[in-house]
Length: 287
Image (cartoon, one colour):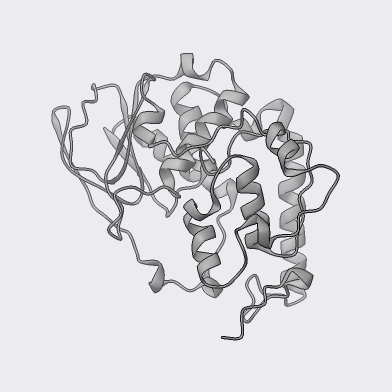
């Protein structure tokens, strides 16, 4: 899709299957993409997790693939670099290479920023007009940042780094990225959205005295980037807007209550070993 989670597009379809690769392959073809050109689908297919060719997939249902594809007409696809995405807007984006030898982080912070601004535009249709000039930097950036004295500069992500001048001041932002191989999923901890709100509020407050801030994370969540954009544009916290505050509070405290009950029962947040997969469990070839 065009970003991490593209704009909602009503196809009027319920798509189910018993093989994840086959389902993703069919969905890709419905929106006009070749599944073998989508890396995570291709890698799963090459490792024997499922087929990508339609002749190897039983497709059943009320309508055929041709009609499903017609319903998807207008669905926007294509990868767009963050610099190009914001060209002509008040948001200036700069992207350097991430760790690992790639030239761009397609699945990380830049895509989350594109998603965040799309959400903000739905929340407030005047968001673009309200947005002041703001500079957002990703990865190991070695170019110039031509920010005026009153313009925000936000470095996003653990891998963001920069050595140079921002206006008349020198800036030294170091790479604090930790390779995923040094982390273990069982010891992972979730980030509470309330804590994200306080953390983002604290960082944006620092911009009153500092030329730049850094949001830590890999990736930095859509929620945090949304909150930064809202603060820059002077838009109230979207989560606490009158129309959303009660549903948000209900969902948050319901989740928190269930989390506490699970802990009291001794259920760990993360469990070791294989998870149950049901009837859709992948069966790898014997060889």
